[in-house]
Image: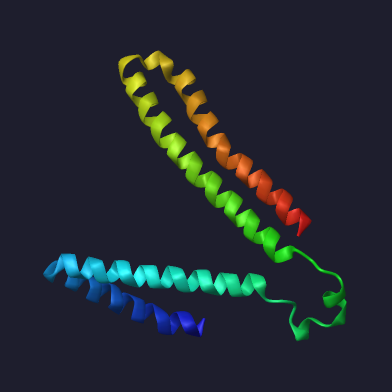
Length: 139
């Protein structure tokens, strides 16, 4: 909680500073933000790689070192399944929803058929959620 109390005003001040810089000099500020985001992404990838390649810690004890578990990998897989299926469903709903609205504006009686198509696109996210539940159950 203390970290949030310290970090939140710093984040607000940083956002205000970036906003002021974007109004004054938009192009160089955007380049600097791209570089900063790329560095943060590479750093997060390095940390993720180190976390996945690290062996069991000494504090885990002898019981966990004899039996290898894949709990962390299953949770990461569940997160990837939910994220990817949600992004796919969002793209599908965006295209089918706009087409459904265009069709309903011309023929309002097509509401039922259009909602079925939009629901099929949303089903992709439900499949990802089911896979995540299965993976979490195996963890």
